[in-house]
Amino acid sequence: MHQGSVVDQFQRDSLRSFFGLNQERVGVRLIASYALEYPQMLDRIAHEHQILQRLDLALQYLRQAVHSENQFTLQTGTQMLPWI
Image (cartoon, rainbow, N blue to C red; front, side, top):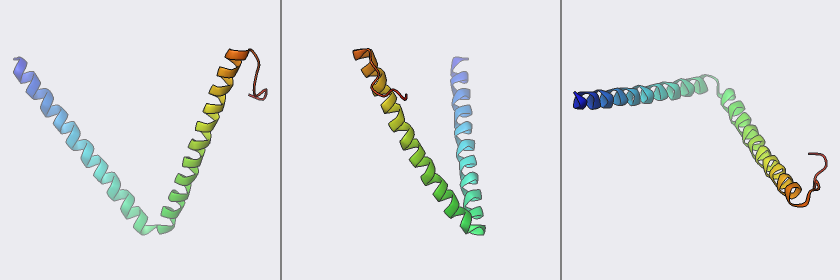
């Protein structure tokens, strides 16, 4: 009985993996066909991706600044950056 459940679980996991890969492939094909039909959209998506990367980097810097401010305040009892 226990072996059957292990085999069943393996088959379920394999099917999930297979369907997940197929969904990913379908998504990639849809994006590729859309990009071929509307090449200007590909440029726009690339530009927006760059903007998102820059925003992510800015957010990382802000988090570091807040962390540094918190550490400084804990150590000294005063604020290093009064605007935060």
